[in-house]
Image 1 (cartoon, helix red, strand yellow):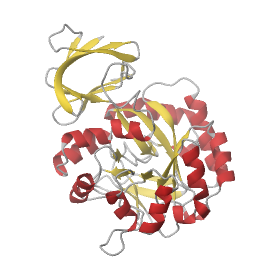
Image 2: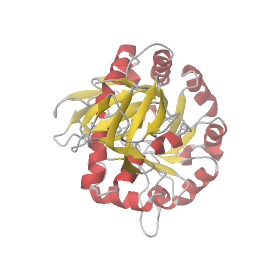
Image 3: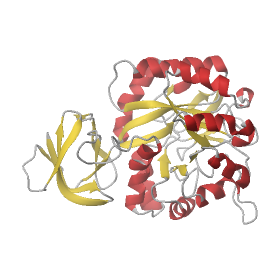
Image 4: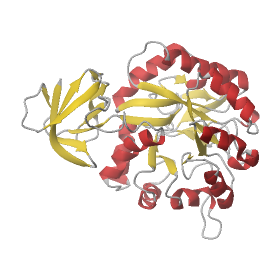
Amino acid sequence: MKIKSERVYIGDDFFPAVIEVDGQRISHILPYGEDCDIDYGTKRIIPGMIDVHCHGAYGFDTNQADPDGLRNWARKIVTEGVTSFLATTVTEKKEVLLKALKNVAQVCNGKYEGADILGVHFEGPYLDMRYKGAQPPEAIALASVEEFMEYQEAASGLIKIITLAPEHDHDYALTRYCASHGIVASIGHTGADYSQAVLAYANGARSITHTYNAMSPFSHRENGVVGLALRMHGMFSEIICDCNHSTPQALRIFFDAKDSGKAIMISDSLMCKGYEPGSKFLFGGHEIEIYPDGSAHLTKEKNLAGSTMKMNEGLRNLVERALVPIDKAINACTCNPASLLGMDRRIGRIGAGFDADIVVLDEEYEVVQTYCKGAPML
């Protein structure tokens, strides 16, 4: 199959080109004048988007351990241009998390359609009580290497990222364990001060979870974890781009400060994505409600609990509202998360030898077509 456009995203810019797909991979990038099967005209073709922090959508939550719900999510998430993602847990009792992890492993090892489930983002339970956000407080626990090994065994080794509060990780033991076993330790839901966060980085932490949210803030005298996210060039940092968790101005400040290869757009989407405002669901055993702006809040405490944002909407927010340069915005949801996961030689770019994960966008950032390993999904 050959597809072409006058605007194919290659090497941080748009070029006229033909993409030749052979099986599940891109075999060649050819001059624009070559004959092709599908001509997308001036529509933008970008790599498939990668969401490394999303809890669920369409009525399904990762913690539910429902194989059909997870398969349905993978099938439908392609409508927003996502071709791979990490199913993300929320803090819960041990038996709930073990079932959720086993479910992801079972689905991943079987047959399903749509976006590639790359593994698990294990958010909690090793978090700080003060900065718990919407995480269930009754299940928050102290970091434990032994317990985490049980979780990883249940997941058949598919936990790729863990969010933890480093100030509650004694001697940074779990952080160092993860770093030595190819698991990304991400600082989040934390009251750590700047020095503690720097030491977490020195002991192997390599990312920050949803920057600005649920962490010690930045000031000119107490720099906090937000200060580390903005200052530490070697640290990857997630950010939710729904313009609810952070203002467009805060998004622009983040992207201006962050190394262009380290910023990662996430949705932090919940099971309520795909439903109307006013809809209510349970999140970690606590009721949440969708507000008119699309944000999700705990019904009782009113805390922000996550988002209903689609990734193509996040891309539009970055470019059109936060005025982030489009190359930085695209990289934040394609090659940068691929690099975080150590998969940047297979996914996240359009080039010969890469998986044929390709998204076609119109001028309004709406998804025209999504190809997952060469197969059209829409």
